[in-house]
Length: 107
Image (cartoon, rainbow, N blue to C red; front, side, top):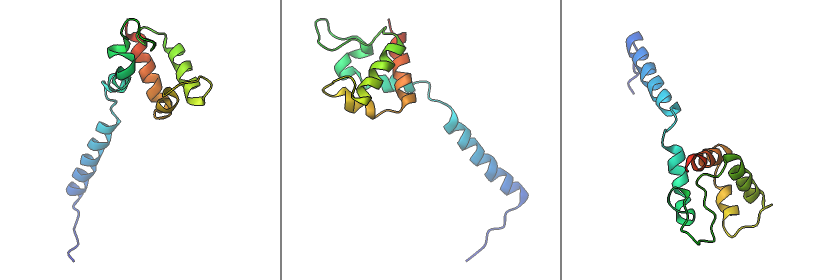
């Protein structure tokens, strides 16, 4: 087995390469909120705008604190649901906050 000999330059380059990768992973995805919110479109309509006459609540333009409370209530079981109690458990608190903020910004 051949041992690798690290020169100071090779070691510095390896460390810099690893540091570049770590910082790229730390950069938040600017589309993350939109991408997470897109999962709601099947029931709540594109951009949170339901079809008129639908029994499903529209999400667009709803205050983020109101949405977060509803999501927390679904998650805890305090608010009855057919599917939202399961869906809300699939997201972290931070992800739910991104989704709520996204829909609150839609008018």
